[in-house]
Image (cartoon, rainbow over all chains, first blue to last red; front, side, top):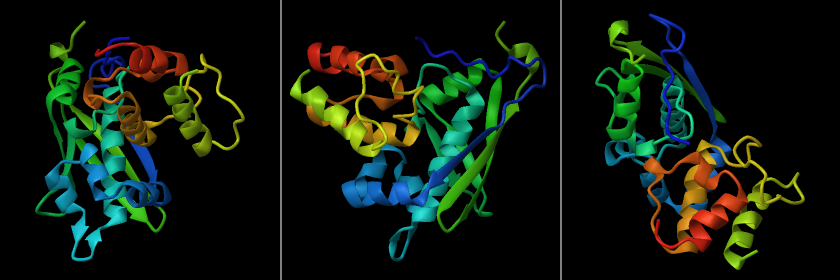
Length: 145
Length: 80
């Protein structure tokens, strides 16, 4: 089944929110089983650096990044594809809030849906991280039929 | 069932102890046996068993939707 972005299906101005929750327990197990290198499959070096403290990878920050990527991907409403982890980059801005950068396949999927950018917010507390994302739409007349 | 596919099946069952078996045609995605987070680890496992790298960014869901599909795409086929 080919990728099929459908984010613009609700008419002009319509935008689909994305949300995700990530369990610290699950991510801790991945870290324990496979080590930090495993997360290079999901995050680029800059993202991993954002999650690192003087004592190593901060699990809640890591969970927050993962949740943000999934939330951002959900706004694209793509069928038949898994989250292109390394094509959705979530970095920490100078102000501390997360910024989403879409690359390669994710950028193509967004463009096909008329999405020019994605804004995301992350929160975490003890055992879980959550993220909500909203797409920024370009000119609705530019949407494919 | 090949030994490699059996190991894949065992890996899924270990993470879903509520299940006793996984039919070859069961939709692993719709039944939430594989989600976005476990997908990364699952691909890691598949790479180890099929002996070749798998590009996650371009992998289509249907390629791993069922054990039958996994068998056909990764353990029976040559380089795809």
